[in-house]
Length: 406
Image (tube, rainbow, N blue to C red; front, top):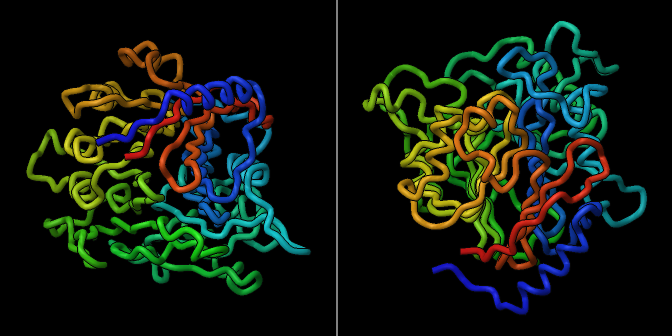
């Protein structure tokens, strides 16, 4: 049963919200959990500031060359590469560590899967770092902010399901090698089933109600018992890159959040015999308060079985193309036939064409801007801030909530 919030608390929150609209987003405070969904128009990037100030960057945007339908404008403008815009956003919101001679840094950087709109694509004119590798996405971000640990699905050999070799992967591996030798970077493979790989680093004992469960990656899903996992795919042929995406569940008190890269249920409607990785992940994950939509809200993702098991109150769609979210996907997200109860959908960027083709999309909670979920200390409730993405002032456009965590 959903908890209730008193009328007095709602009134106080409403007054506070009125003061925040049009003003810069208030800074994160110790004990809060922030989840920033950063809109560059060129891929996905999410920053999580955990209750003790530990930072987790999930994906880094980075597509610099696009063709229709991937033709959304770069935000805030095209004067900088997407990875640099991400780094500048982080520099504005990351807490400054205590002590002398310290600087803002990223504690964990996670690449959900090896596609250029998530890790940064290397193209012919990608600029070159003085350290030898080229700059895009994660390699660009690291030019501006030190990274403590990188977590991905392929380290150390990058050979599953077949040897990974292309300019973007080759450049990424060169980056990892240089950073490990010269800046002490640590690199780890994401391990499904664990709930201690991504942990609080600054005050680990202060928030015992916080945890991140590694739910899925590389075709293996958590069973729900201990740290055990099982294979998802029964066929001999290897799944595509999207279906190998890292998925995790964050819990803070009563609040739960899901992120799953570009997981999809591709062709499940055409061939029901295909293994539905989304459904397997959702069964392990369970209900959540909020989630990042899989695969930018594309037609092949956020299937009815997946949504019916998660039943999110808040969905954030990180759009990067015309048709994000897709007509059929948005219908599944909004239909009470998928699951009962209210839900709010926040979309980082809806194009003019998508407004014309996706029925009722104008009723979404937001259709443009960075989306920030802020969870109160202890996790009992949360609000959603939408920020103006046309410049770097971080002005609040709207505030939704407070929502009561399940």
